Length: 417
Image (cartoon, rainbow, N blue to C red):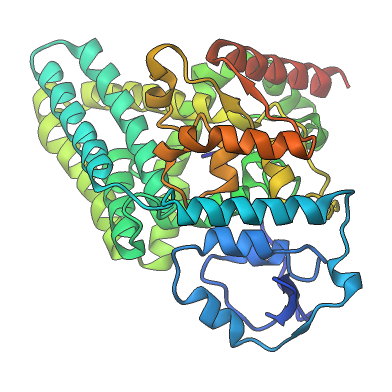
């Protein structure tokens, strides 16, 4: 999910060419519907084949648009491997991908979709029932958790892996994210695509662009001055106490409304506006304005901790990629710069993290329904084993420990460095 704050990518008139499936395409004048993420590959000599295939697996128009662009065959120099064994690795990955498609692993399950949607409906009903019957703490706790679960569900819809129908998934994301979290699905898609393209890469992964609130690596921490260093020094403590809340409120009341207004997205404006009308109608009128504001902040604090803490365990403590490094491929980004969290007793973590504890599989196959990730994990392990790549997996407690240890270590490095 991440904290991305929309890093700016400079516009220029340089000719932009991109390598996809053995051809060089001219995309200089192409306005990419997915945003500026295309510039991460164009003109960089990076093979964008797997990124293109995996981002557009459900789009019927993507290949048609691509083929309409001026193109030429790539030369051996264009396609040579940048790391030992890279060509063989990508061939094996493409083979595995085709097998999984043929075996139906990318097909959505409507029963699962109905269950996920009804779950958040019933949890909201139960949460408000508790509030109205004076079980305030339990009500706010449940509402905070279900708001976080709206975040998990809209994430799946934003990848078009929920129903598999792009317009339907976009509509579901707009409703679930707008009503359940007060946020913009279109803003999220634009930013999240950048994270998926090159996780943990400086200047590319927006989830590393987190200053001034938090620094996950001392590489970005070196940019700050002395006053802010005191905040970063304490970030391991501040992260769950106040940082996650500030990020959520900043998204709800600044970044996302600004995006909605700028893009004139009426549907998102309607859903986000309806959220606050409903809150005022049912909460403020019953508990009073000041009490309802306090309740909203508490509820948002619970939700933001639920979603952001669980996001942080998957990436933030892992190695980063230098801004000018063009050698890392699609598979290595997943193997080295993401990690999994074990399912836990009775697979409780699978539910708690909505299958996003399988981040390796999710980054390899972002368009695959996420409940299928546990089913393919052994095959991914075998692929990694064959190519001597790590398959990083920890239990939930250890994952949290290493995440907070990294926050503390980075805080010390920035402050004393």
